[in-house]
Image (cartoon, rainbow, N blue to C red; front, side, top):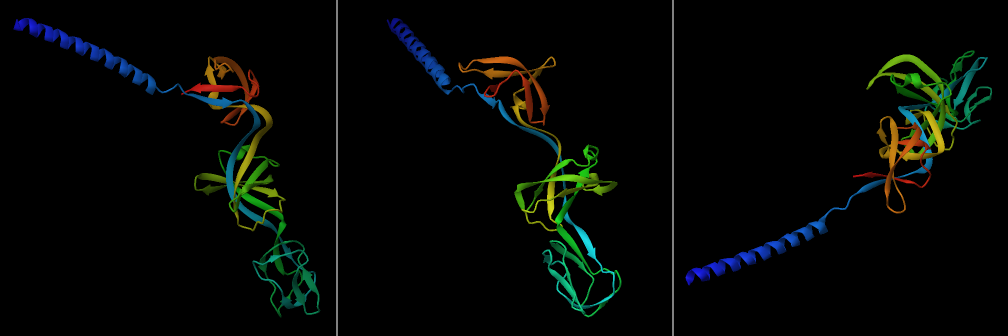
Length: 276
């Protein structure tokens, strides 16, 4: 009798355990489904844009200097400026003992003053040196890896530390072929000239430089991250309006290392996708 009761009890307990296990399994599966992370796709739109390749350099501003002289002897009565003064065009520089006044021939800064009050100036002896702000240049240090890519007349964009939001266009006017030891190896000095008078600059101000190698404007572009290469051919995955993803072959042109010019296979507004 006791054996029958024990047998029934064990069967009932086993039944309960099976029901509980089955219920727990379904509960666990449901929770796993709810917590399942959806599949992620990174999107890269195809759009019109500009592509520019460049290499960098850095340097300082300098003004073209003019040393004033006179083809006669004079006695200086009064000097009106000192070294470091910022002067305007036609501003008085000095007056001689006869009342003649020497004026600045340009806007700029006095870099050196040789004349002194009540002292004589000999024939064609230097009187004053003025760096003209109307003729500004920058001397840029270029690494040896890039110097062979520099050409006279090449476009260079300058960015000044004091006004990092403004880029100033300049052109290469001189390449110094003598090497100099820099912090990162051998460097060469390249002179660029610019005419921008909207930004107030002084000699010695530092700047960064972008030497433009090639530039395309208003071309169809796509991120290089979206491009796959198989058997020497280029492919991207495109998602259409029905959320369907398909692989298509494309052809690209110029690239700056981040984005590429699209020549064939895509149109503006297409969305390339990459899983993960």
